[in-house]
Amino acid sequence: MNENVKEVLNQRIERAIKGLENHNMNGYYAKDIDNLYEIVGSLLNKNDLVSFGGSMTLFETGLIEFVRKGEYRVLDRYEKGLSKTDIKELFRKTFSANAYLASANAIIETGEIYNVDGNGNRVAAMMYGPDKVIIIAGANKIVKNLDEAINRNKYISAPANTKRLNIDTPCKKIGVCVDCNSINRICNKYSLIRKDNDKNRMHVIFLDENYGF
Ligand code: SF4
View 1 (tube, helix red, strand yellow):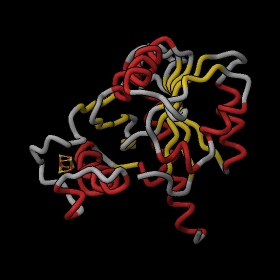
View 2 (spheres, helix red, strand yellow; view 1 turned 90 degrees about the vertical axis):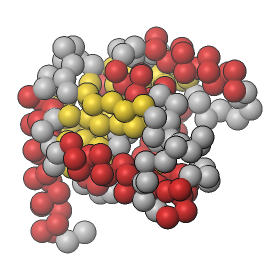
View 3 (cartoon, helix red, strand yellow; view 1 turned 45 degrees about the vertical axis):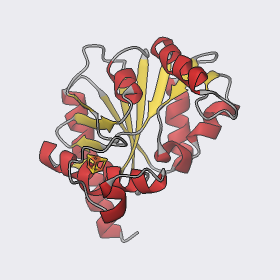
């Protein structure tokens, strides 16, 4: 990456970390993947019950495997052979987890976390339940304000996810949101986390590369 672009991205990450800290949450910069694992490892304890939100970033950074190989108890939504009932139970057990790993649709520089879910299990767990929420965000997830966060979902995250999951929605076909009324709509539950009263609960780790969408 061009050095000047890297510097701009790092300044953006610095602003986001400051914004989160102003809202009683925690921000970190991971200089590379090994450093990311070190930070995540420092936030988890041996035998912690750990769960994941659906996330391309967690796969791309190898964090799913990192947790599976660690000394943790894992509520693994990606385990082969799980039935719909198993997954429903796993999502409910997630509320009792020690830690929840996920990414976000957008992190607003002023220190807010924006998400949109189809099912709602991810936004629900981020808002309440797990003792600790650890969000991994590439620099591509940082936006200036709420309008940019909303548009990021409409123009990038949701259309890309419907393509990835082969979900039949208008945005899968045309690549942009039309605020559909489709039975397959993936934008149903919206959340904006502005602050947490528990300083130890919300942790956002930034990387200065693009991850997920
Ligand atoms: S509301 Fe519908 S068209 Fe818009 S992004 Fe979501 S699924 Fe796609």
